[in-house]
Image (cartoon, rainbow, N blue to C red):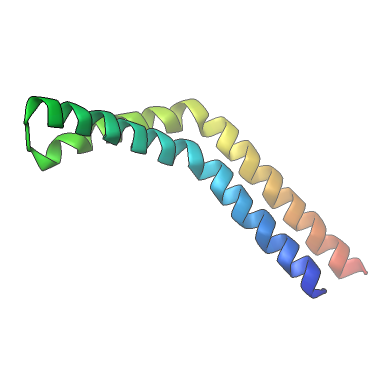
Length: 90
């Protein structure tokens, strides 16, 4: 196993993690921003008000995009297993 192969695997794994987690983080950030704007305009300074909408939005995102996330992770895992197989045979 060469250094280039290790770097390629690490880059692929980091990109996969970023691609899979981006929708969840984006939705959480967007909902938090909207709730913060509403809190600022209404002068409500309750810190726990943002948690419930964020949790609901993140759960809905996981429900809607869960199959896609699983597919991406399974494809990555299959690629890693094929790579292990090629290295073991070679």
